[in-house]
Amino acid sequence: MNSGTTERKLSQKAIFLDRDGIINQSLVRNGKPYPPSEMSEFQLVPGIQEALKGLKARGYLLLVVTNQPDVARGTANLATIEAFHERILSDLPIQKIYVCAHDDKDGCPCRKPRPGLLLKGAEEFGIDLTQSYMVGDRWRDVDAGNAAGCTTVFVNYDYEESLKTMPTHTVQNVRELLSVIK
Image (cartoon, rainbow, N blue to C red):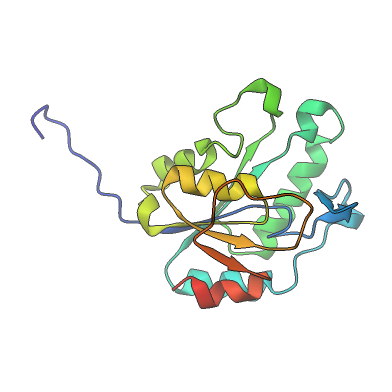
């Protein structure tokens, strides 16, 4: 405190969750996951409601961090994405949803695998990233969590893509989150 400022104690622990594949079901075509494009395709992942209730009861703040590059590509309607998020916020104990609507070529620091969305959430809520988790189903999620200093949980749906860095834990479905996050 030599400059007269007080250092904020980071005490909140959080779970950062990817959206597509973790909160809502992805549409898988040729081994690759895609987000729903309209409300009729939007379905919660089986078991996510129970898992999130259990994690919230353990004292975790629940935040969604999602890449939505189809907005930048002009193939997704922002109003539809916002409708998905309204449904998530009304049906699940999620505190906030952070969105990066850029494509890779934009070089945005928020776009996973960069940790910008997690860092923004940590700053806003006073989150201790070393006591927090990033849960996702793609390499970008694992890399973002690792870059932010979180414990990472990879939900393995056997997509046709490889991980670039290793997760701390691997599970086969969201119901298993309660067994690896204490």
